[in-house]
Length: 81
Image 1 (cartoon, helix red, strand yellow):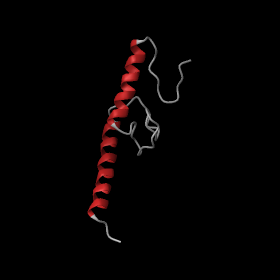
Image 2 (image 1 turned 90 degrees about the vertical axis):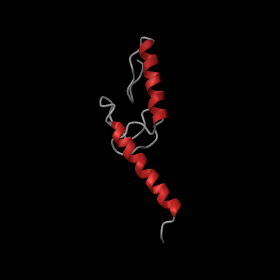
Image 3 (image 1 turned 180 degrees about the vertical axis):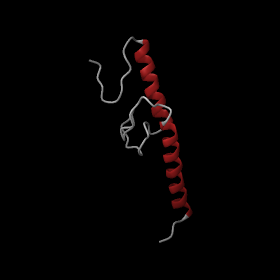
């Protein structure tokens, strides 16, 4: 079975997204890559920390708000205790 143009476009989109996530992963070296998005828990390719820019920005906004509120920033799996 040969691939049509829609299949090729979907494959290219997945490749581009994977590459972008890998490149972006280097911007947050203090956070472990857990295989899941640190904001929404979506599954990710190896080395990625967030599934997209929106999740990363939402997570950053929450961390900034926590710091402004006098709370420590949370990492994946930690609690407020």
